[in-house]
Image 1 (spheres, rainbow, N blue to C red):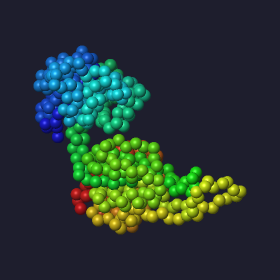
Image 2: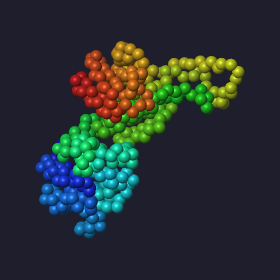
Image 3: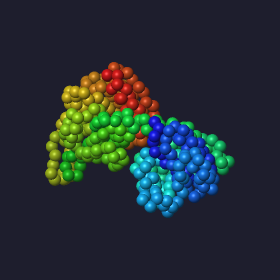
Image 4: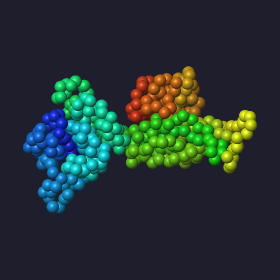
Length: 400
């Protein structure tokens, strides 16, 4: 996967810098074109000449050392790179990147590149757990950078715990796997619905549900990372989309979502309806705020259009996936929904289970296809569940 790729390796001033020598050597042996940027601190631990010999390229040390007057070195290097690996990544460089600082060759080049960035942290176990470091890593993850988890073991400071730079061979394996998945959905169009709907009763009040949209957004991000052209139709949520390949369409009501999804449906390859759409809406709505009256206030409700049912009736070549959030007998009810609505697959979960359901960062689901093959996905982050679901969908599409 890395043959002929242009890879910049950023080496910072952690004792694990010596492992970066092996990383650069392995990358070069695999056929990649490698150039190294070292921070000033890194040069105290490993000689630049070592990386020059291993990469067979000049090592970059100083932002202001411009050897070619026809080019600005850090911009030229940023544009040249297909991939950017920072190993070891100290707490310092992670903080700089999270703040958008550019005060040396490495941080300046990172800020200028559009390449995929992989960060392999290495630091003391307590530093790795510090709230500031965690906050900075979350920010970089939100911006779409990829972390390669450090391992557990004996650290140079004498502590034993998490913070040890992952082994170079494993770093390469993680990157190769990620790069391979970037093409899983290449040339595919994916339509995803997410979040709740709001059914207005007057200018002040509405009926809704507890859906946060996190599962649908995780699916959209994962599909985009896999190379798909994604259309995300979402109800009112407080979530951001990160990936440039996601076209986001905001809606409010069930009718809004029905209209937009049907408008987008014909040109899609995969349609995943993860939204929690209102089944009922007020039969009568009011232009003025309803005033408080003595006694009870009955509200007559009417059915909304069943989006998933209508898509099941209309589909041609689309692979249609529904969601079933249940509180009891979830597998049986999910299987019934799969058949009744003419779906290709359904994702079933029991929202009463601990760690599953609305508003949480984790989920527990069962994927059921129209061959009645079940795959149980245990408790995991919704981002990880989303990737597994997409791989199951792809496998089913290949088997058709």
